[in-house]
Image (tube, rainbow, N blue to C red; front, side, top):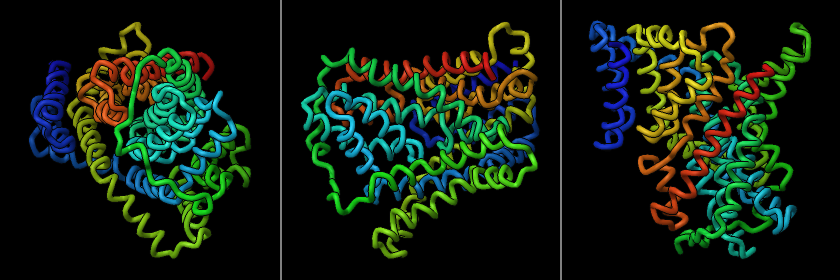
Length: 438
């Protein structure tokens, strides 16, 4: 019976979001109420559970996502993203332009939300394709594979960071493992896959062909642009390596772990970006703070949707559903990593949102992570991979790609959907291989 209640709840969630176009946060709260009451919880206890779930998930994420949005906005508005793109393309040349845009997508995609990275970088892809005479899908898909993978796999992006918090996974290890898994997924889902799609014609809509391009003297230098964009990754990775390689009580280890804590890493990165991409470029503090303030307004709904998913997770725990499902799955001969990936995939197909799919799946498989022998960090990556699978007409990213590249539904399915599925499958394979060594 508990399993049936969860399935009905997920179908209910899908119908509310996809069919009736209800706001995701409201849909999550309604489904949380339904699941809790259907499970026999006292209605007031359900409300308390929802409040606890929202508080526990947002306590950590408000800081991370808020600072992440500020950093992404500073990177975009300063011209650092444009500088990284143009310099890498110039260095790699026409022959290797795919690898240039892959690296650009990876560097810029780490600190920047997917939709922001898409809107900033795709017009630049259009310019590159026009200048080189290469097919648009050939140039654009590798960039989007990078953006998708960083969005689905790597902290400080919303879903992987929230799932890591749910599982009490080490964010530094999740990031390091995620980069190892991400590289082959991006290569196969980006440059290699797009080479089979040169015949598919995509023509950008006229209004997207001439983006606002900053002059060379208006942009920061290449080195400082890359350093500032990647600083959170550098600090978090250094902390993870320090924990692995240095004695626990060594002063250097304690310092590196402190500055590499995700909260401190993001805070320090934003402070550095305020100077390197703002004040050092001659901007006034009030102007830089306007940019920082406008960044936060864009993540309000993202935070609410994550909060709603946290509420459902807590109701699943408090009502005993998670424990029940965990008991059922314990007897399964299928790897917990494969199960987590499969559950995330099913929810992704039904609901559309990768973030919703990842967080909902995390609440369902939480008991598996609490068992010995299951890596919490690899479970984060398995769910992240599944949450990218089979994007179709109920995913906003599907329509964003379709409209910008001016494709029909059929060609969007042949390109975007195949790419998303490829990186999802490659992610699972990477996780299973990594599981042999960690």
